[in-house]
Image (cartoon, rainbow, N blue to C red):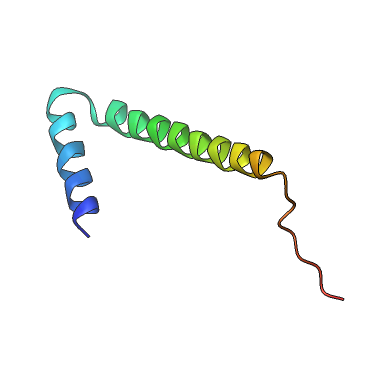
Length: 58
């Protein structure tokens, strides 16, 4: 779980130079932007494939 340790270290470093509330808000904004970009990429990939991947039983 190196990613978690590194993220915590970066957050601690950022908190040394900015208010903790600013760092937490910035991390939230960054996480939201990353999620939105990922969702947009998945959606564009599905549209590009031209196939509906839903499977129904029957």
